[in-house]
Length: 499
Ligand code: NAD
Image (cartoon, rainbow, N blue to C red; front, side, top):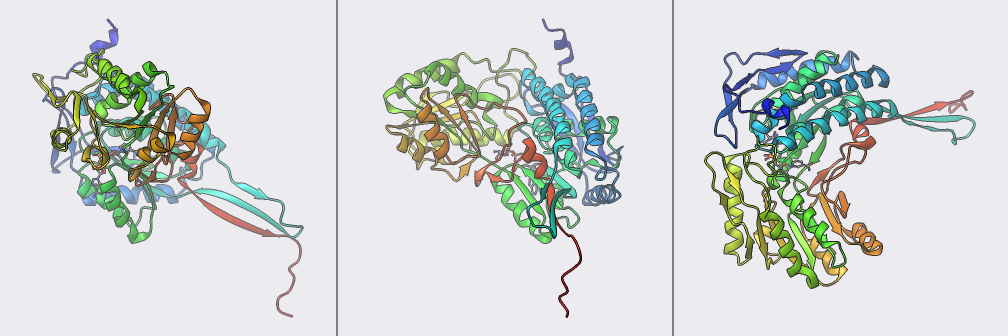
């Protein structure tokens, strides 16, 4: 048995968290408390402060002062990189503590949490390099009398709003890039998964990040999230969450025309051509469906498979689903854990019912998985799905797969693109021409060929259509948090305008 298993047990007592402003923990004091129950164990595991609007104002004021006095924004890339590298080491040093809290609050398998926390550390290491690589441009082609420069400056104070599905990983896909750019941050995690964001504030402080550069306020989206998107002293909001709330953030941000980065929902196709390695493709489709119990913005929830192999492929998928290990996320062998909240559970079950009601054919799954504690859903596959069905059109955010069939590449692309979303797509084929035609024509910000939900921080992520605007990670992910300044430098004596 892995010795670290002893570190991954259900704690006897819930852990209390204050919030984090100006490099220090703040106690909840008289504020209300949100008790978070483990989705797998029905036990209160964390107690999170419900901050007030006054707390938001104070955090923004602190972040503004930290930005304006240059304690971070005017450091060199090398100095910022040193902090980010120490933060990466700090994450690795608290790997098990972070992973356990992540699993207790989200219900995801502990093995997955460990991978996400380690992956997060790697992103800080990548972003440390990006802090030093960030640069502008020079124009030496304007003739003898003019020289041009384009510089990149940090955009300012960033409000960072994150969802519950990958609390630590999504935070890590944003924070080190925002910091690499020289900005300061007020973060608001999802109210049900705040713990690892709060711990990250402590890790950053211990890594030498100056006080006030990274602040965390906790509480509900309607109150604390809304206060950030409306705030007149925030220059940019990076919002990751549902398309419906993203729309609210867009409207709220209009007050001071703050820049808005939106990473929203998806209804992502898995396009499988008959010439694909069907065993590999079936494994990838099941992974893309069941990873994080389908609560994944890039979940491959629509299978679009060539008709000649559809029956065979459906059987391969169902066979793999039957062999999945679903259950207690603290068991290191578990592949699929619990559903995050009772509300999300009801939503997913409602979609499964709608699939049956609207005439789709149930291939496997079809409801809840019995368990002594917690809530689990059996991965569910529907065949004979038509494009007007709710389960084809709406983001379910659970382990529910629809199957559509096609006969030509044109038809495959038309079905794949028949959605308001454009977040991700996967293409399975051994034919180079087919894959190239398909990835060029599919309307999505991220495309995988012969794999799914893979990659590292080098490549940018973001959506087309109603899946969002802006890009995170990669060098694009640092540039996102900068603004461009153009400098025109005249050389020689001025040609008089006034005679
Ligand atoms: P959500 O939209 O309900 O909440 C996201 C965050 O917004 C939370 O912190 C929430 O408290 C906050 N919020 C809620 N109301 C708000 C308001 N009025 N103003 C400001 N903030 C508010 O999303 P969720 O249920 O936490 O996460 C699931 C959704 O996130 C799915 O739609 C999924 O596709 C999407 N998502 C997208 C990406 C991506 O990179 N594109 C990644 C992960 C999740």
